[in-house]
Amino acid sequence: MALLILATVFIGFARTYFLAGVFRAKLPSLLVHLHGAIFSCWILLLLTQIALISAGRVSWHKRLGIAGAILAGLMVIVGFMTLVAAVRRRATFGMSIESLFADDALQLSLFAVLVFWAVRVRRDGAAHKRLMILATASLLGPALSRWPWRFVFSSWFVFFGILDSFLLFLIAYDLWSRRRIHRATLWGSVLIILMQTAMEPLSHAAFWHQFTMWVQNV
Image 1 (cartoon, rainbow, N blue to C red):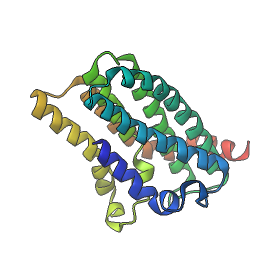
Image 2: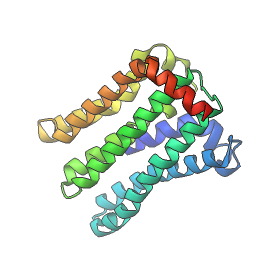
Image 3: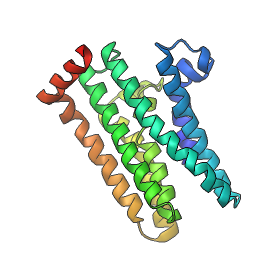
Image 4: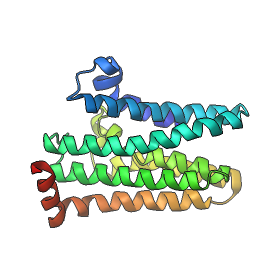
């Protein structure tokens, strides 16, 4: 699943970021470069942490986990700063400003919740690893929205079906390995689906429109 996450992110940002030279890519600001670097480091850290556990290097995994917690905090802070900057310059990416603001704000907020939960239960390895995967999967909307294939955007059902396939893979793994769905998988998946369900109503709410206008003009 970590490799699928890596592939999703790489495909989405290959043209504008990874294959464009990363720091030499033509991005709107230094903040966006920092945002891309921090989020890319998170994906690489996820792969590294999984490799360390697979190799039996649990002590190394724990030490690196401290840096991971700090990195997650930076992701949320820099993510919101980048989002506010995008709203102010009206970078819509094919959607309304309100939708961009609502979608990304909800994703960043849920990422923070799931990572915090994962850190709290870090002594429970089964719950910890599932929550880290789900936290990362909750951020994949922007990457998927930049895929170069039109079928992805043929309907909301297709778009969110691809996003939620990560939840289905994790549920299938639980049923195969444990004969039941792990509570972290269940509640983490429920939170992601609730977050996705809330995106459209929030983006059309009158108070959100007013808040978005205030952020643009503050």
